[in-house]
Length: 97
Image (spheres, rainbow, N blue to C red):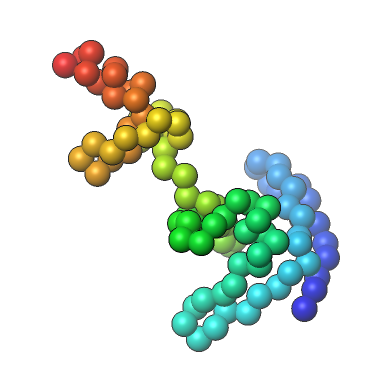
């Protein structure tokens, strides 16, 4: 099944979403297949984690990238007591103590 249209301006923030023309059905266990074209385009590999967000009545999927709980930086992440912290914030915490 294919569908083509574009979503235009939204109230509040402005964003444009372009449909891919790809539709998938959800099976009885709530699963669906993410097409290989999208996985390749978004660099989503087997066993990668995806985050789900709710935005109004939309479901947004995003490849999970660990970020620092303090600044949101995604580079040089370490885990401290099961929390993600970048090295820069880690250094600042050490200096404060």
